[in-house]
Image (cartoon, rainbow, N blue to C red):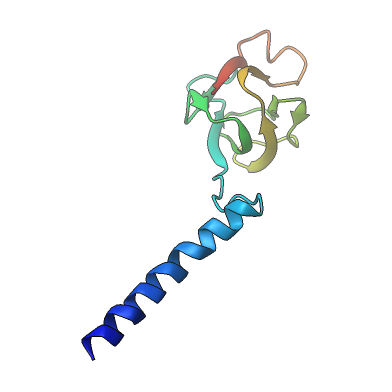
Length: 124
C-alpha cells in the first residue's frame, strides 16, 4: 500500500511541474503584468497644480484617474494622449502605455501648463 502512495505522489508531482514547463516550451508567458494606476489631483494645493499619487511608474499599461478639486476645468495629457475635460468636482480616467524614460505631463487648457500644471513622471 505504501509503494502505491509513493507512486501516486510522484505522478502528481510530475503533473504539477508539467503544465508550467509545457507553456514555457510553447513560448507562452504565464505571468500577468499588473497595470499601474495613478491618481492625479488637479487644482490642489493651488488651482494650477497637479498632485500625482506616484512619482514613478513601471513601463507598460497605466491608468490615470484624474480628479478635479479646483474651480476651473482641466485635462491631463501624457504619453501622447489627452483625457476628457474634467469639470470642477468631477473625475475621469485615461489609459495609456508608458515607455521607459521621462514622460512629460501637462494640462492642455491654454495658459494652464505655463502657470504650473505640468511635470515629469519617471518610467522605469
